[in-house]
Image 1 (tube, rainbow, N blue to C red):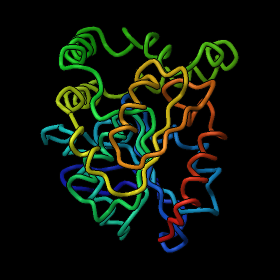
Image 2: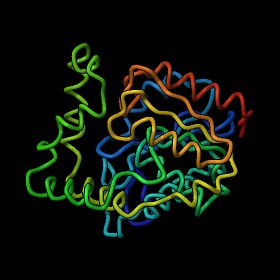
Image 3: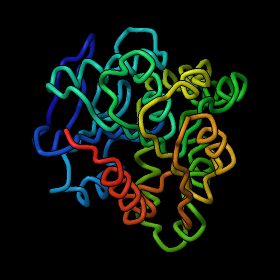
Image 4: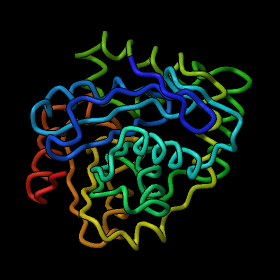
Length: 266
């Protein structure tokens, strides 16, 4: 376990492999999850590249802090963490809100971004009204009130029926996230629009989406890929919103092939 004070908070993170051993891939988790969603991917990439996972502020074991919770705040946390770990450039892989954080990092600190993998995300997710409604329920009834509906978007029917124990575990992960941290991220999503940033990306980019994603459907992720100059677009069959959990072998293969094709060394 690594707990490090970054800006005004303590961040929980794990660096696997030395930054000098080829590229470093940084994974940013989605709303309502912690960095364990990347376990299967990190294990499969062992020996190929260094990996960094961390709990963004207000999630997992990381503090929330008192700073205004905008996408820029989350990106600043990541920039400071990379500097603390002496990682000068990295491949940034973000899932859902993690993709917006990756884009914001590129907007403010392009020197840190070697390439981007944008998974099940978009330049803008949802509307201010939809996030307001989500926040109101979380604050008055708790995350458990909408957890089952979220699970339907995160995972396919086949996952629900064939991997019920894992489903229960990921539902627990969601409802055990601090409400304040969850709400802060929802507020950040409500105001985030990275359209202009996406159009100006000049590093290699790969956009990935599960074919059954109920949160950021393929058409939405396709629209992001169309905005990012030269971006590749891949659809993973048999996956919902979190393909790194549901189809880790395919997801990791796409990440690995992308890194190799771009000769993304340190």
